[in-house]
Length: 72
Image (cartoon, rainbow, N blue to C red):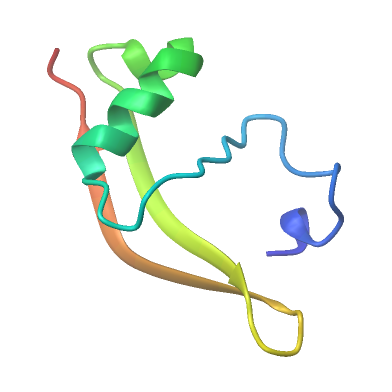
């Protein structure tokens, strides 16, 4: 979580996505594949987590361990 504490100092391979809350993981995966060549590889694995500020401004992480394996 410290990696996201300072705006502009996020991990180099981070991808920020702004989307509707009803977007599917497939739709998010397709967005990532558009901008990240490594995600297009046949053996690529993407994991998803929600990072958000709590009411005190500290970042929280919520994950359901979603994993998308690329087969395309």
